[in-house]
Length: 235
Image 1 (cartoon, rainbow, N blue to C red):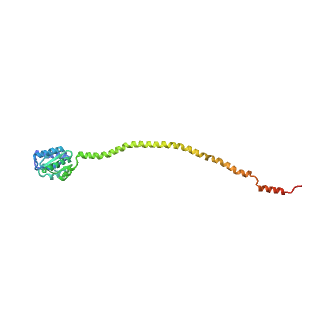
Image 2 (image 1 turned 45 degrees about the horizontal axis):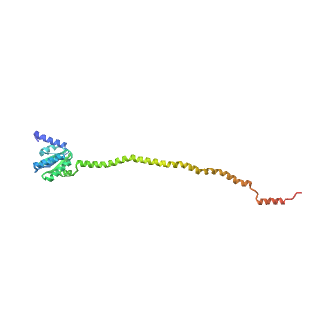
Image 3 (image 1 turned 90 degrees about the vertical axis):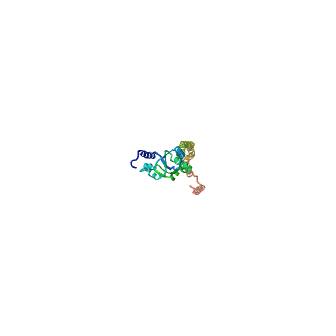
């Protein structure tokens, strides 16, 4: 654009700055909407976190040229208005979808989120997503369940440890009297065994006594009598 007027330069800079600062920008064609309908649409988008502005397509093309949002130029046909979003882009997409269902003259053409150009079908998918608050609540709920289980385990550890130590002490106390009685019983059972060796010498002497003091048998006595009888008398 040769020698642009200051007003046009200001609009181009405004669109570029707002694109840079916004969390998303959704483009619509508003042909056929009445002034009253546009006012109602602006109120609903403001409540959802959007700011609805009408710009000339040529100026918007200059604002997005040589930027990651250059693909938006393909959507700039017909009377175009941009909903700049600060916050939940899905909430603004949902507000546009709901308004378009009741007012077919509003056409959602696409948009750009985080430098990514989106088609009209992409914006419809975005409109089906839960709100940011709902997603955060679901995420917090998914995190809280494991954390609650972990907290329960951490609290149970000292309690279970105390129960284990108490049971161990009770078991040792129960085993202590049995261990103290065991040596006494062993000594009582071992006493006869200790006296047993003292009876062995007596047994040996008893075995030798018959040999030393054995009396002559009747056969030997008869032999000696015959010998005495048959001996010649000495005159």
